[in-house]
Length: 285
Ligand code: PDD
Image 1 (tube, rainbow, N blue to C red):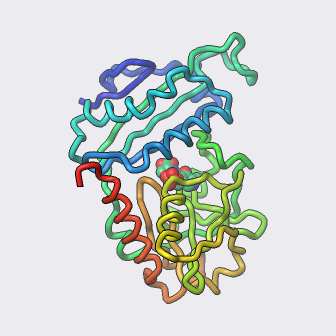
Image 2 (cartoon, rainbow, N blue to C red):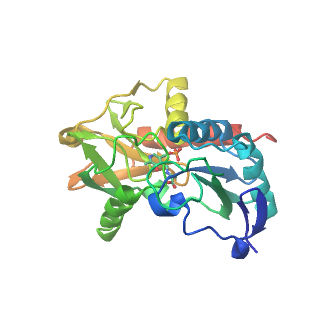
């Protein structure tokens, strides 16, 4: 039986119901967070908790128990017997239930808070062998820094990529690579890592910030500048990264083969350094 969290209660998923008047359902008026459990501990839970609270603040969704994010995440793992497994916790907060009206409910209503934990392992084949990306214009709004569940503009290009046998989208806005449909993108040129700076055009990935700190701590240069899409042929390596998939080498973007078309040495080194960081986060080493 899958146990979920809904509005202060732990219950069987079969007994969890959400109103059709929920603003998350009607408007995508809602934010979410995804964290990863490594068979005994979360990786950078404080980083995820900070971003979760920031998303609430930026959207003016008020959840009085936001400080319970960490405890509920842990409870979901244990209540689903996932303590020694690799798993993810998904957490979503909507502005709540009210008759459809673009204005926020007045007086405010309680938010809808939903969370689940699910077994999830890494796609090791993709991490070892690499994958292709689909190059496409970034159709999203200009608040990509908010982890909103309104993801139609991510889902549609992602499906287009999927239909073409690609594992992820490479979004381009005004000639510059921004990020993927559900990941941040990195390039390697002359042994330096290039990636889009934090801004309203990308989600500030927790994996991204850990990759960049691991790189800097190990003497690898990091250049937080967007890469022009017409410079892809000059890039030596590419990879994308997120909580669910970790670090995936990229062999080709659109029609452009990246570097030698195989996972490159800097990417492999970053994968190792990131693994070390995950191991180092284990409290019972
Ligand atoms: N997505 N950019 C976008 C648009 C994302 O949706 C994500 C994560 C990232 C990477 O963030 P992080 O490293 O904190 O996971 C970047 C999650 C995994 C999802 O939607 O399932």
